[in-house]
Length: 365
Image (tube, rainbow, N blue to C red):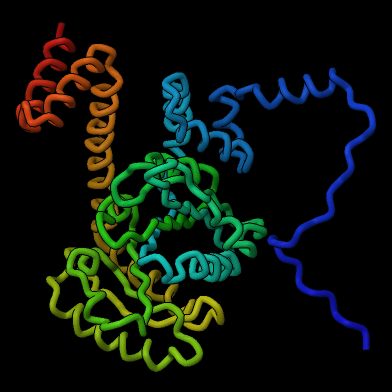
């Protein structure tokens, strides 16, 4: 009997291609020049509106750049895309590491594309506090979704941003919406705290849980539970089905103890298996019920307006902090005060007050 070929995987090693015996220095120089060439803002905007993935990726790289030279160009691209944005459903997905966020998003994303949706996944990977590096392995973990023509996956490093949200995720949403993606999924690092940043940029906040990892009541944390619009207990398959059902009962009881949401929505608890896709359609049904409710009132639009205001102030805070630490007049002042604080010659509060006073005095002059 003839053996069937094994399924291809993105993890398989492919045969290499031997280098030609002779190379043209002119050709190499031409390729290098082309790669270094930066497209104009108008070219990027046109490419994004025409659903060009390369233009979208290059524009996202531009707005993620910390180079001050790219700042004005990035703003030009964002402003050019802004009139064409605000037409998607934004879904935030969080959960502790190991809960299966990437696998869930792949199954969920594949289900959405089967319904004709265009899905953009903005996956945030944790950055090392030592090397500052990040693996950015979400495309490898979502190897089926990454091949879907109706899906776009963009992994970004969290950096030092609160809550594990990439510094420019908010602006990236605008670009993806302008590129025609009607469903934006944001995957957080999932550290279990400070998820306010994600909640403040999405329309629906989904909390993933797993059963059988200890006392389910230990996982009921008031802050994150109050933000959740739905709780999905993942990995409900095999021997874990019974535990998942018991966990569902516990979380349902806990949700009744929290204050009612201003939207009038009552959070749902469900179980699913990202591996078998059991329960995935029900998750989407929960989301469609939520959006039908909040769009029937003014809550959906009012929440978007509130989020825009929130991010204006967040950007002000970020810019002030950046200008403070990058101001040439502040470098020596910061170092001398840091030494004084370390040697207990000055309190941290006094040093902070002096530094701020010095900065604003110099800044005003």
